[in-house]
Image (tube, rainbow, N blue to C red; front, side, top):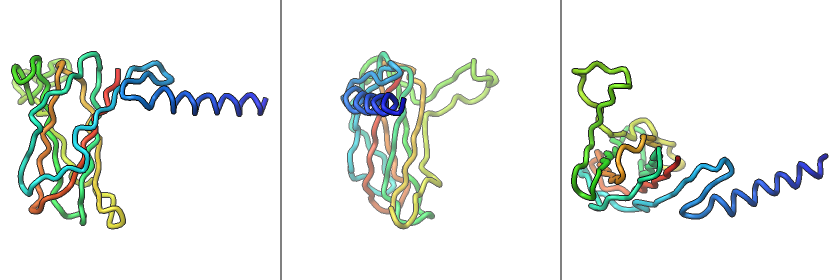
Length: 165
């Protein structure tokens, strides 16, 4: 019995390492997933937003889980926020605001803006980092992110997109 459990555990680890490590993978649960590094330790100027100007194809996935990590030396520094645009064509027919009548909002309510803030995500002095995950349903075949540094100094940051079904 213990021997069977041991081999089952090894099988799970091997499956994870082999099946979920690639750029387009299908993990244990059979859920298609894909990881895209958008920014890797990139620099962003103080009080500015940036964009690579490219739309990433996210068609075929249901959720975008966007990991944002940025330098933060103290808890009172202004955060790095992230805006997300879904588009139906590359560079055209894109929207940063969403109105979902199924969400229980009133018809005259202002549409939701697809933005996330890193406020209160500081890990502490030891790491001098903040991080958060912005999970949003995919509402168009293309996606573009817009990081914005609210701090008064330039900082390094990373953004990784994890797409799931």
